[in-house]
Figure 1 (spheres, one colour):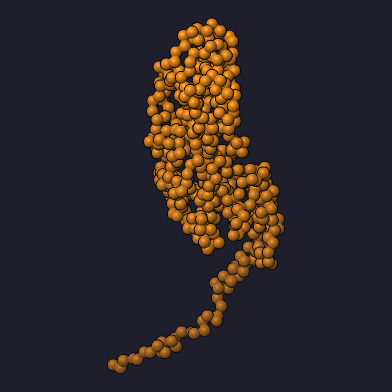
Figure 2: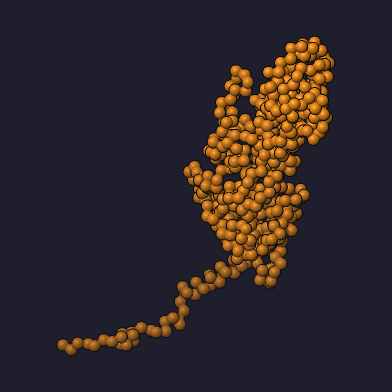
Amino acid sequence: MQIRKRSSKSVARRHDLNYFKKGSWLRHWQGILTLIAIACSLVWLIGSFAFRGPQLLSKGPISSSHAEFGEKCESCHLPVQGNLFHRAGFRKDVPDAACRQCHNVPDHQVNQTFTPQCSTCHLEHTGSMMLAHTADKSCTQCHANLMAKGGSPHFATAIHSFVDGHPEFAPLREGFEDQQALKFAHSEHMKVRRPGSDAIVNLACSSCHQTLSEAGLQWSGSTARLEDASLSSAPASATPPDALARDHGRAYMAPVAYAPSCHDCHTLLFDKHIKEEAPHADTAQVRAFIGQRMHTYAMQHPEVVATEIRNWSAEEHERVPGMPVMAAPHNTEEWITIRTAQAERRIWGQSCALCHVMQVPDLAPNATVHDLNTMLADPASLPAIAPTRQPTRFLTHAVFSHNAHQAVACIECHSKASFSQSAKDVLLPSIKSCQSCHNGESRPQGPVLSAGHAESGCFLCHEYHNWDGFHGSHTQPKTFSEVGMMESPN
C-alpha cells in the first residue's frame, strides 16, 4: 500500500489563517462591556470629586496630635505650587506656613546644608501616632556621610544608627575634665551611716538625687531643725534655672544642695554653748552670724563667761584646727574675740573643708587677742572657696528622661558610683550600657519584642530644631550646664 506523505504546509491548508479577522459575538460584547466599565469609572470619579472633593481619597491614619483636623484636610493641605502635571493631580502640598500656624519652632543649626520642609521629616498618614518620632533616615541622609555634606571633622562623620557609628558620650571621651570643685566620695555615702545618733540611715541614690519635681515636693530632713539653722531653703546658687524647671517632661536631676541632702548628717554647729547652726552661705555671712551669736550669748550669760575665764583650759582649744593656743582672756570682750575666732576656725576646718576646696589664711602661732580682733575685722582674712560648678546636665546636646527609666535601678547604669572616691569622677553610663537595651531592634508601631529591645531612634535623644536662645511660645531649651562641651551632632 502506498504511504501518504504529510508536510507542515499541507497540514496548514486545513486551517483558515484569517480567523482573527472575523468577529464573534463573544469578542464583540467583551469590547462593549470594557468600554462601558471605563466610561462608568470616569463618570463616577469625576462626579465624586466634583461633589465630595478630597473626601474621595483615602487619607490613612492620622496622628493623635492632629486628630481634630481629621475631616478638615484643607487646614494643612494647600494647592500644589508647581507645574501643570502636579496641579492637575489630587495631591495637595503641605507647606511650612501651614505647620507654623500652630507650631512656633526655630530653624536648624546655622551650618545646615539644606532646609527640608516640615513634612519631609514629620510624615503624616503613615500610622505613626507621634510625628516627633521621625525616621532615622531623616538624620542619616547627612550624618551617615557628613564630610560629603560639608561637615566638620570635629564631629562624628559616619553615624548610621545608634548602634552603628555613634560615638561615645562626650563627657566619657578622652580630654574631658569635670570642673566640679567638691570633695565627695560616692562609695563612702552608699554605705550604712550613723549621723551622730543611734539611728541608722541606709543612704540610697534617691536620698540625694531627686528629679526637679521631687525636689520641690519632698523633703527628707527635719524642717524644724532646718528653720532653726536658717536653712529652710536651698541656697540660690543651687536653685534650678527657670528654663530647666519648665522642661517638657524630661526629668533631669536637680542640683544636690546642702539643706535637703547633706544637713541631717553634716551639721554646722560651731560652739558648744550655742545650739543654732551657722548658715550654709558665703563666708562673710557666716562670720557675721557667728560673731553676732557669740556676742548675744555672752551678754545673756555673763556667769558662764566668768566661770569659763576663771577655769580656762588650753587643752580644749588646742583641738581647734589652725587656731593658736591662747592665754586666758581678761574680760568678756576678749572672751568673745577668742571664742569667735575659735568658732570660725572650727567651721572652716571641720565643716566647710570637708566638702569644699578652700584656702584659709593661717594665723601666727603667737597671735594675740589684738591680732584676732584685726583678723575678724578684715574681709581679706576670709577663706577663699572654689566655686562648685555643679552641672545640671552633662549631655548638653541630647535629652534624657530619668522618669522613663524608673524600672531600672540606678546602680545598673551608674555602676562606677560604688567605688568612686572623687567628685570629679564622671559617673555617666557608657554608650555600651545604653546600647544593651536600645539595640535598634524595635520600631515605632512594630511588633512587640522581648525585654531588652528598646527603641533606638535618633529622635529619642536628639532634636533637630535649635532651641538655644529661642523665645517662642513652644520653647524647649536644651543647654543649662555650667560646663560647655561639644557633643555628638544633633
